[in-house]
Structures are given as structure tokens and as C-alpha cells.
Image 1 (cartoon, rainbow, N blue to C red):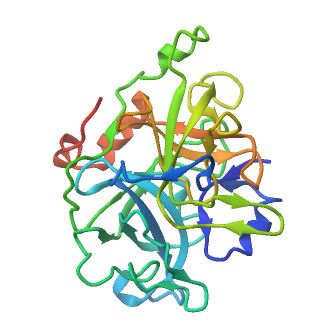
Image 2: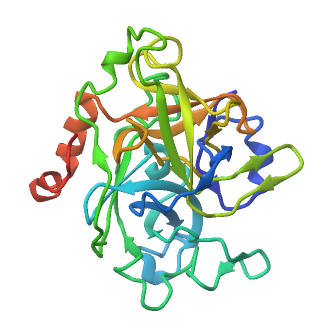
Image 3: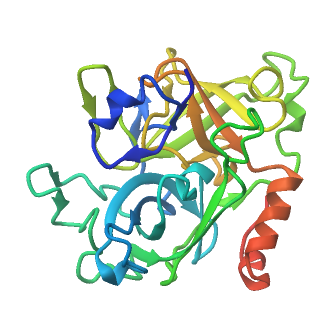
Length: 307
């Protein structure tokens, strides 16, 4: 059973994920609070509720949430299934960059009154630790029709630039190719994952801190099986490792683990409850670079660091 890792409006949907393909998830296992990647954000998407909304000023309905990373003050990299409009007309998004962006969420009010998640940017945070926008793209994600080449990368363009001391760096083309013929014990196979997703998921309960968490994962495969040169397969089970879960979709996979180099975005898993191996869509391919150049302005592309 394939699982995508976005997090839908209601936790009731977690049950549905058990019987349908589902997007990527939150950080599970041996995770820690992530204060190392301030450019990793929690993004909420909105849809029109009566056919009249055209932007965020018209109070559209919250649809789903994902994770992602700023590659520059205005370019936010996430998963394609997050920005895909197959299930409704997306009218905009908000992104929070606080580590505890939704940690004070109250199920009764369905709001975090500290950050404003998921309805607004708290006073004094717009353009500082929170941003909005309506411009978003996906590479051509089509609900696994072309599996394993699912083109699961997306980008959102912020209306308010977020100025930070550091940003995510886009992996250079072919950065992971040397792992195709890796000799065990002789190459670094440790990756770092980051996101705001669930930390526990089962048929009877879920746990979400709505906070940015990080963990180390180990390489399983980068070319064969469900990967075929498009996806990166890692394991977050055992040995002090952590994995991804619903809500981590679009979150960065860093390699080397102690850098800001984004080699992939969290994409999907093989079951609904965040067990087993994790799959992320590689960003170190010529196709991804070409696509980004096609949807970004020249200035936006030039502002991205490629490592």
C-alpha cells in the first residue's frame, strides 16, 4: 500500500489512508526538535468553499498541510502532490517557519493562537516568520499514474520574502549517482530528514506536535525497485534512526546529513501507518532543474544556491 505524506483537513482521513494511496508523513522514531534548519516551514493550502473565492482574502477553506524548504527568500520547494489541484481548486497557501508553528493548536478552536496556524499569520510575523501566496506549481504529479516516475516536486512563490541567514541548497545534478554502485562501509549512507508531520500513526490513534522535527535515516536503495533513478529510499527503523509520516510531504532530505543540501523531497511510504521504508523524490536530476528553470523567473532561479 503506497502512502503519500500530506496531512488532510481531518484526522478522520488517517483511516482512509489505510485503503488508498497516501502522501508522505511526519518525523517518527528517534527524532529531535529541529532548530538547525530555520528555512524549513509548515505550509497550509486552501480551497474555495463556494466557488467564489479567488485568493486568501476571501476566507477559503483549509485543505491540507505539508512541509518544505526555502531555497531563497521567495522560492519554497515542496512535493508535487502538495501543490496538485486534482482534488480541488487551490487558491493559496500560508507558510510558518517557527519551529513550534502549530504546537499550541487547540482542537476545540482549531487554531494555534500563538502562530495563527492554520488560519492566519500572527501579528508581527508576516514577512518575518510567516508568509502567504497564491502562485504555486507542480512538475506534473499524476497520482502515481507513471510510478515510479511520479514527478513529485512542487514549488510555491511567497508574496512576502523571508530573509534568513541561511537557506536550503538545491543538490547539483547527479549528486546521488555515486551511490548506485556503493561499496558498503566505504560511503556515507546517512541522510537527515526534517518536517512537521505526524510522530505516531496507528489504526486507533495519531500524534502530531505540529513542530519541526528532524532525524537521521539510512540509505536502502537509490536506483532499483520503486526508485529507478527517480526516488530515494531510506529507512528510519531501529539503530537510533527516525523516519517520515503524514505531514512531512515535501520536507527536505539532506545529504550529506550535516549540510543544507536538499537531494530529495519527502514523497510516499508503502503503508498508511508510517512503518517501514520511506521514499523521497530526487531533486538532483536534470529534469527537476530544467522544470524549476521553466517555472521560475530568471531572478528567482539565480537566487538559488546549487551545491
